[in-house]
Structure formats: C-alpha cells, structure tokens
Image 1 (cartoon, rainbow, N blue to C red):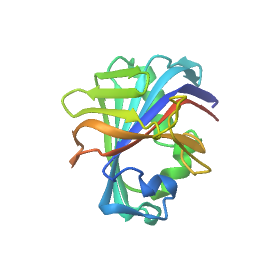
Image 2: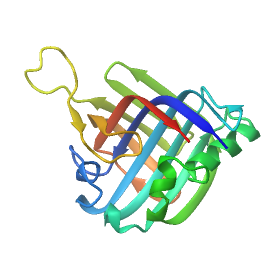
Image 3: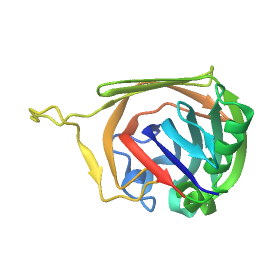
Image 4: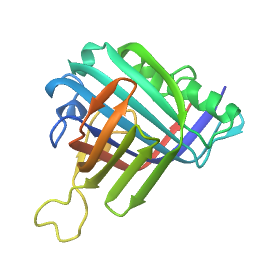
Length: 200
C-alpha cells in the first residue's frame, strides 16, 4: 500500500490576510467560523500502482473558530477527468485511509460531507493561481510581494504545521465565489506552494 504525489498547491479561506489558522490551528480564526478551500494540483504520482498525474483534488472545509478543537465539516471534489479507479485511489488518500498528512488531520474531522466528481480547471500564471470547479467554486489568489522587495519574490510563512509543508507563500484573494457541500463564503486570505511532495 504505497503511494506518492507531487504537485502544486493553493488555498483560500474566509480569514483576512494573513490567516491566523495557518500560523497555528490553535489560534482562533478572524470570524466565528473558518471556511477554507484546499486545492491540490497533482503533476505526478501513483497510488498503489495507479498513475494519478495530471489530476486535481479540492477539499472544502468548515470548522469552529479554533480549528484544533475539531468538529470540521469536510467535502472533497475529485477531478471529473479521473477514471473510476483513479478517483477511488485519490479518495482513499484524501480520506486519510492510506496514511500520510490527511490521516494526521482525520481526528479533527467531525462530519464528512461526501466526495463528488466535478470538472476542475486550474490556472497558475506567475503570482496568480485560480480554480473553477463546476458551478460551485470560482476563485483566484495572488501571491503577496512585500513592499520594497525588488526581487519580486513573494512573502512566505515558515515554521508552520500544515499538510503541504512547513512553508507557504502568502496570498490574497482577488476573486472568490464558493458554494459547495452546504458551505458558502467569500475567500479573502490565501496561501500557495509551488511544490508539495507526499509519500506513504
């Protein structure tokens, strides 16, 4: 039961820039609930011998103000371009059934809102990252370049606990409409990672 995934990642949430939940799950969100969309754009990888490269998975979550308290509501979209076998394997990884980072977050999930197949369109151009998932999700984030940074390198948050890794690029939402699994919000904050690598 071995698997590995590599790709890029981005998210948007209902907090203001910079999201306190990403700094630490034990910090309270800016508002009464934390609502977030996590997008995993898989460039390559396989799950138990099944190639899953070129597919995208997105998780939509709604949690209490303090995320480490648990009780998350979580729904997952799997790329409609995936075969039934690919969708089954990716579903197992993102449900935490095959170990890895999502298994570590499993105890925080109080209610599974299900898994849906949907067309997922991802665009990543320089500092901008966008996703459209059917009629349910349409957002764009832009990585933040700090005032006075002549290199154009975006600001990063490091030394954190996050399923993607210990460092993420700080972003802000430039467009946002999310209504999925009974979760509706307007994204404001965001994060991205040019690469992630998982294996179990």
